Image (cartoon, rainbow, N blue to C red; front, side, top):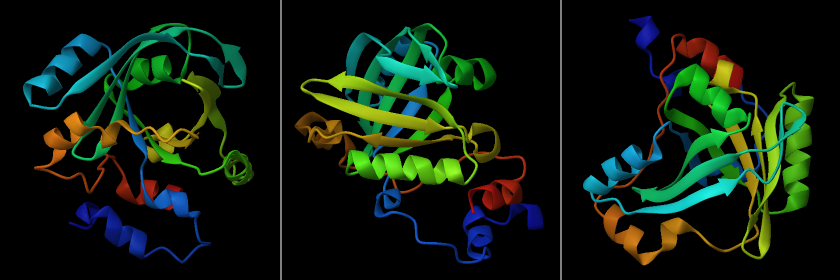
Length: 207
């Protein structure tokens, strides 16, 4: 039975550590990598969740494992019970998305935290690298009149998902649009759960 102790109980048993930045208290967006965007989007639409299909876009200015890469992907957005979800179907080029899909098939790739300033983004990235984490993928993409800066840390193997940081200076949130509020009003997202073979190892890793 000890192997079934919930993760939050294990977390409470860990010694108190330094205070994390405020932006870690909320998840800004969930990155979900899929093989067949059309099938996934249609599936959620049948459940009553509007899906905004952005279409095919380029990777933008991107480094994957320290190397500049290029490629294209199909993107769709939705608000699932208050969580902003970004679905990505890689179409060409090497990236963290193609690597994740090859190793794990369809699934949640990253939980991303929105950092308020570019300086804070860079400082947190340096802090995480100082703690021994490697940057899996980072880049800058254009979103209208602003540039969105992001980074995924190489935490998938030990942490079960890629820790993500994003600095998005725009005030746009797909979760705030009227049509998505209607769809998400009956339920609310309050927990993310990941399957792990050894919960204790995962808990210790994140601590």
